[in-house]
Length: 182
Image (cartoon, rainbow, N blue to C red; front, side):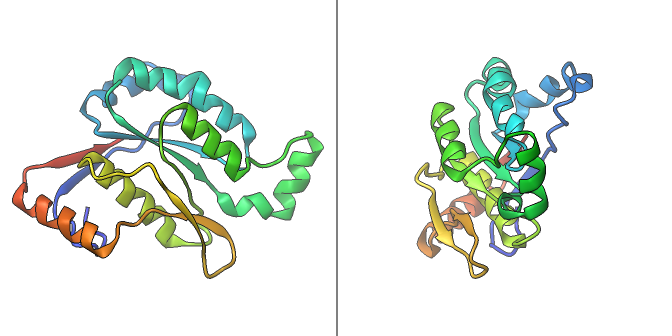
């Protein structure tokens, strides 16, 4: 995965098939070759966080128990979106809070990361950097929250320059290493 970071290895990125029951028999065929699994949920839909324990963790433990897991809260910008808040309040719900996502991550022993593709294109890139580092065993579960320049909270788990240099050096030595992310 390059992305301007200098990481020179081939990352085979597989899109997770939608949580539709139609894919329940096909999806597990992709797991055995995966080095990391991104369990993504929609911050504006609390039911998707519930499915992390009810569906995804169970499936991952069954088909790839030794794979690195990262929990990703998507659409963090909708946490403060007026339309979303009104729609959720009509159902007596609220968006998933950072603490709720973080607590779920602790339950499944995974780092927690949030992103918003609408507000910051780099946050999605950050997630794939974290996933790549997890694949090469350089990941750290201590993910820190930073204030972005837009005033919204997001996760920053970018490696420091020395860590990135070390990872890049290791990856150049082992060009055959690949990372498959499910």
